[in-house]
Image (cartoon, rainbow, N blue to C red):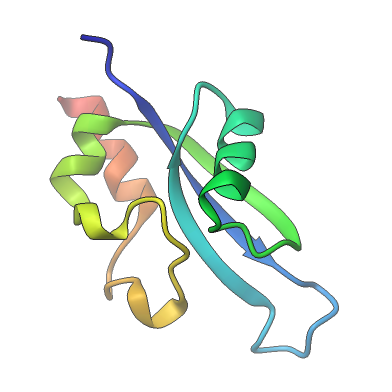
Length: 96
């Protein structure tokens, strides 16, 4: 079975007032960033605005670090656990 790659997409509105520019983020599957952004639209977790992407993240690393209930949905700042770092997930995926 082929492992699915995931991406963390972070959305912002640079024209919004400071402190409210972050629109949310989501973990979505995709073979590349373009496909991940399209999948975010299809899944209803792309609020628009500018997007930054990190990944790919192997599904195994995502499964070990992020509750499945936080996949494929728009996460707000309060939904992201303290100390959560996409860099930590990527570093762990490199050691597995």
